[in-house]
Image (cartoon, rainbow, N blue to C red; front, top):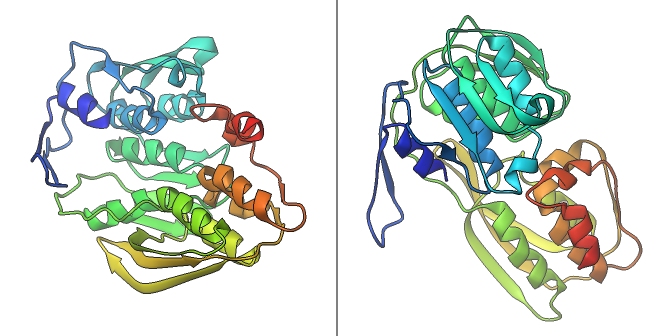
Amino acid sequence: STIRCLRLLGTNIGTIPGVDQVFIEGRNGCFDESRDILDCGNSGTTMRLMAGLLAGQPILSVLTGDESLRSRPMGRIAKPLEKMGATVIAGNDGNLPPLVIKGGRLHGIEYTLPIASAQVKSSIMLAALKAEGPTVLHQPGLSRDHTERMFDSMGISVRQDGMDLIVQPGNLSAVDITIPGDISSAAFWLVGAICHPNAEIRLNNVGVNSGRTGILEILERMGANVSVTNERCEGGEPVADLIARSSSLDGVEIDGDIIPRVLDELPILALAASFAKGTTIVKGAQELRKKESDRIETTVKQ
C-alpha cells in the first residue's frame, strides 16, 4: 500500500524479482499531486504516515482504504496536523477516513499526545520536517522509536528530554537500510515452540528494539525458556538471534507501561496463557479494539 501511494505521488521505486531489496529515488521532500485517490488498503500505518508526509505538501490529496480501515480513528492525527497549518477533512466529525488533505505552510507546535502511539507520533514527526521551527511532543508514555532512529541515521535532529520529544525541521538524506526481522511475526514461532512438549527453535536477525521487546519480558515472567544471543546493531536498530525451548508457564498480570510495547503480540500471548498454570489478566489494552479488527473479541472467540 505504501509503495503504491508513493508511486502515485511521483516517487520512483524499483524492485528486483527474487531479491529482497527496494530502491527508492528521493524526491527531495517534494511530491506531485496525484490525480488518483491514494488507496491505503488495510494499512493504518500507511494512512497515518502518508497524512503526515502530505500535510506539508502544497497539493491536494485524498486518502482512503478498505472497509476496515475506514472505521479506524484518524482524528488523533487530523487534529495536530490541522494545528500545524494543514487542512484535513474527515468523516464522522473529523475522525474517520477517507481523509482529504490540503497541505500548506506548516509551523512547529507543542502538542500532548492523547495516547502513547508510535503511529500518531511518527505522523506528526514527518509533518515536522516541513514546519517552521521545532515541534515538541509531550508523550504520556514511551512507544516504539523506529522513526527517531531512522531520522537520526538520515541526518535529522531529534532530541529526547524525559518524556518530551523535540523534532527540528530539515531534509532527510538518502541512506542504505537493512530491515531486521519483525518480532511480532517471530512471536508466533516463539510461543509455538514454548507451548510444544518437545521443541527448540532459533530465529536469526530479529529486531529487538526496546519498544518492541515486551513480548520477551512477559514470556520470561511466565517462566519461558527464551534466550537472546548475538546482540548487535544494524542500521541503527538493535538486532539479535532468539532461541525458544519447550517450557512450563505460569499465569501473570499484564498492565501498565508495558502494554504499548506488547500490544500487537497480546493475541498470541493469549495462546501462551491458555497453556499456563493459573490465570493471566490483561488490563489497559483497549487499543486492540481499534485495529484492523476487534482483536479482543476475535481472540476471545478463538
